[in-house]
Every structure is written in structure tokens, then in C-alpha cells.
Image (tube, rainbow, N blue to C red; front, side):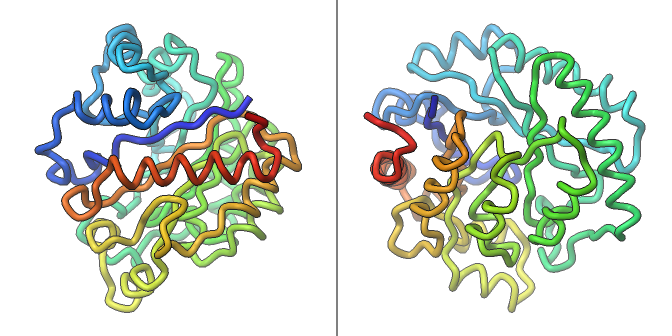
Length: 299
């Protein structure tokens, strides 16, 4: 079954909490659930930490808790320490019947810092193999708890480029799966269609993020930080005429491999410049139309 979700960063940013700080929480949930009609929403800094309070809050707006970003520190700590550190987050996922944990290594990431995104960290081949071994062990633990690890390749981190996505998938085993993010793939220098074809069999979560190519090119050429790029409008939703990602072939690939799970619009923008209600409505309508077109959904 395919379900469509969103992420609160369209309204209120997590990395820079001043972005959207004036937007009330009830407006985010009302627009996402009651007005636009998403099935679920991912984690955000506004939501309560208590698992039942979270479930009840979202349910009031007709929303399910999808999952949420979890920052690993496997480059600097043991798998056992990571397992101990994740328990509160894992409890939240299990209580809300989530299927995946969205994981990204952030021990040396710079996406939230005032640093050019071009200056991100990189691993050697041997370091990637060692990281992959630890990530697979962590994923195996999560699998034993009924949760699938999906790794989020992301700008400003050790897994950004197509080659790094390939290397991570090669360095891990059957318990590690991929969160494929179309926008981060394109921004990271990849052809989303080519990368998704290579790894579709291991994709268990899909972020329908779009980019504005003229702005992402500017971010690169001017040495801008990730958050400067966000404020400049680097990201947008499916269906935006300024967007550079064609989602029809990507959804066709998912249909061809029998993908089941969430398709999430995770597209942070400045809500002052781009009204979240309008953009998220456009994104969901586009995804549903294209999904029917390619046979991913039937109604």
C-alpha cells in the first residue's frame, strides 16, 4: 500500500528554528491533515516527545506518525553505544507502529552549520567500508525490534554523491535499506532516475523533494551553506514549474519494483516566500496524479 505524507519543515525548519517560528503548531497540523489531506507526517521539533501524546496529537488532525530523522554517531562511537542512545526514539517509533527509522550519520556533518556545503566531510574507501559494517550491525539490531533502517543520503554529510550512495549500499548488507531522496540526489550531482534504478530494490522510504537547478548551481558556485541555499529557494515540491526533477519516471521505477510504503514531500522552503499550504497542496496533487498514471496507485 502507498501512503502519502509530508514533513513539518515546509512550515517550521528543524535546522534553523527561526524559519517559520511564527507559524503556530496547530496551523501546521490543520493544513497538513484536515485541509490538504496527507495520510501522515514525519517528526519535527514541535511534536511532543512522549509517544502517546504524539499519537494523540496527530490523530486529532487525521494524521499518522510516519517516522523521523535519527542522527547516528557511528564514526565516533560503538554500535552498542548507538543502540543505547536510540532507545527513546525507538520507543516512539514502535508505539506509533512505524515501519522505518530514518538514519543519517551526523557526527561530522555540516548541513546545519554556517559552512559552505561544498566543504562537507568525505570518507576514504576503507573508512566507508568500516562505517558500513557498523551501520549494518545497527540495522540488524533495529530489524530484531521490527524496524527497518533506511539511510538518508543528504547534502553536507558523508553520503551525498551518487558514488557515495553506491559505496554505502555496497558496504552494507541486507538489513540496511535506502531512503531515496530525489532532491538530495540531484543536488548531490546525480541523475535521480539512474541512481534509483540501481538501488530501487533496497528502497524502503521515498522523499519526493524537488530542486530549483538555477539556485542549487548558485549555492555551489558562490560557496553558500546548506541553510543559505534553503532560504534562497534551493528546494521545492513536485509539480513546481521551477523544479528540475521529473517525478513520473521515478514513480514508474517504484511501481515496477512493487514499492510499498510512504511517499513523503520533504521540501523545506522559507514559508514567508513560499506559502506551505499552496506548495504542499500542489505537491500532493502532482504525486497522486502521477502515481495513478504509472500504476503505483489505482484510486
